[in-house]
Structure formats: structure tokens, C-alpha cells
Amino acid sequence: MAGITSTVIYIDPRDKSIHYYATPEGQNRVVHETRNYRTRDFDPEFYSAFSNVLTEFFRKYPPSKSSATSIVLPDNAFFSDTINLPAMKARNMATSLTNTMNGMYKNRSELTIQTFQALQNKQFAQICLTGVRNVLLNDIKAACTAAHLVAQNVTFAAEATAIGLVTLNAKLKNDVFLFMDVKETFTRLVYVFKGRAVGSTMLPFGYEIISRPKPVAEDMLFDHPVAELAVLNAREKAKAKTLTVMDEGSDAAAMAEGAEGEEGSTLGSGEQTNAVNRIDTTIKVLPKKVPRRLPKFMQRPIPETSEEMANENFRVFVKWALCFLGGNERLAALGGVPTVYINMPKEFEPVVTAANAEKAENGVEFVIPDIGKQDDTVARQLEMYGGLFVTKGKSHNIF
Image (cartoon, rainbow, N blue to C red; front, side, top):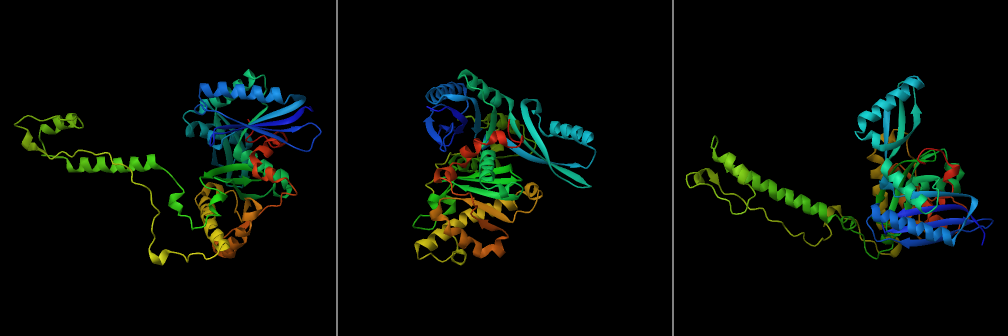
């Protein structure tokens, strides 16, 4: 078997999977295999399982002597930010940036941070940064070493996605745009500045909602039962404290404060007249989620055809793209975004034309990027395809 010239290991906690993606030497194809793990993400047991999976992969696909390996981690393992600094000489700028980061991040000594200067004028400079915890980097590299593998590059999925896109379409490498990579069950939004990912987010729905036979209820696409329970319980506790009152100046106030929350506690007979109606807090059971019903004047006409239904359901993607652009002032300061590029299966591409009918109102144009005559699996796995070209990319976001 031919040796492997470039390898990507992609960790995807969404389905607890470890992906092997590689190019055999002298062959115009990729090898893609997946293994699942059952441990919690990035705990000691995970790293042991990770090493075992790597050993299995590289025993099956021996790398060539010049092989390069890149590790692609989930986006939420990293953080990104922007900093505005007054314009000054380069040496003073470096000192000011270091001091600013030390003040912003109290655990600065525990972080590895990369920066680059995106913009500068006579008044200020705008710095983009990406950071990750040292312990995560060290543990990942140690797990690779245990599998007799040297991880030359570590990055995250949004950056690898951006690299994959600009590799397939070099005309985009100097542009500023929002990229919407639509998967089957989730969508990755990446703010791309001249070939670099400087911001990203995930939506918990993908192209499978476009083909649904009924209009999607947006509030049913997000499932946050723990957060909803926390809000309900906080309200109940707040009500209880509001309704529990004490006579001003009463010594019983201090006693009641100490007894609050203790089941069956009572005050002395001479003090009971000062305590008024303590309220028991009841933990409510979260009711079954139902779609929110809008007033009739806010409802849109129900689509009559499957094409109209697909166009209507795609409006959810349009809304969140506009919200991401409108809600990130620091990213918007890097430059206006006239275009939102969308990667999705070809059968769904007609919805983009319908979305652009409201281009004047939206303020942006939705475009399917030209990525050449690539195999469909390349377009659907851009974060892994881009990982093959990490070594040829810029140093920012590559650790």
C-alpha cells in the first residue's frame, strides 16, 4: 500500500467520533474512516481511548516519511476576540497588547494565544486573537506521542473549514465574508477575514429542516430544558423570598434567616407573631414543549408547494446569518460583509435564489461559492479537507 502523505484527525464531540482523513501517496483520492468513543470529552479516559484509536489508524495506514499530521479540534475548545489599541510604534504596540491581554484574561498564564493585526489607521489598530488552554494542547499532543505520532499542527474546525473553502476557491482568500457550512443536522457559521476564521458559531439544525413538509417552528429547533428549569426554579425562589416578610427591627429576622430552607423548623411561641407565612418552593416539572403560536397578523401565508415550503424553512437560516452579522459589532468593524457564502447539497441550492429576492431588505447577498468539480464528499467535509492544507496556511489559528 502507498504511504500516506497528509493526515487529518478530527474530533467531533457532537456524535462522539474520531475521524481519520488522509491522502495516499500518488493517488487522487482520500481515505476516510471513523471510530466512536464512549468516554466524556477530553477527560483522562478520553485521551487513553484517543491514543488507542490513533494507533489503530496508523497501523492500518502507515504514513510516509514526509507525512504531516494535523489535529482538528471542536470550535468550542478555542476562543476568539478582538482588541482595539491606539496607533503607536510596533514595539510599543506589542507591549500594550501584552498588558491588555494580561488584564483581560485573569488566567493568561494558562493560555496559548495567537494574534495578528487586522486593521490599522492613524487613530487605532484592531487586533484579532485566538486562544486555547495550555493543558488541552499538551494533553492532545501527549496522547499523540503515546501513539508514536507527532502532531505538527493543531487547529479548530472553523479555521479548517475556512482553509478548505479558500483552497477550493482562491479568489476568496483576500475577501471578508460570512460562510455558512450547512450540514445535515447542524450548521457552522464562520466569519472569514482574508482567509482566517476570526469568529464562529453553531446552529443546532441543518439542511434536513429545509425539506420538511411543514413550516418549522423555530422555538422547537432549540432544546434547552436545563436552562428552562433553572429559570422556572429561580422565579419560584424569588417569589418565595418576596412573600416572606419580617417586622422591622424584630430579632426574629436573624433567626428566620438562619432557619430559611430547613424543613419543619419553627420559631419560639413568643416570636411566631413576627414571622408571616413562609412559602414552600416547589420544583416544577418542565411541560412538554409545544410550538409558539404567533398572533394572526404576524403569521406568514402557508406555502402550497414543496418548493415554497423549502424557501420558507430556509428563512430560519437567513435570519440567523443576519443576526450573527448584526450582533457582532467588533467583527463588523473588520469590514462590511456584502456576501454570505453557503455550502449545502445541490438539491437545496434553489432556496438561495428565493432568499436573494429580499436582498435589498437583508443588506447581503447569499451565494453558492464555486469550488470546482470536486467530489460531493469534499464539499460535505470541508473541515477535514481543509485540514490537509493547514501546513500551507498562515500561522494564525495553527498551534
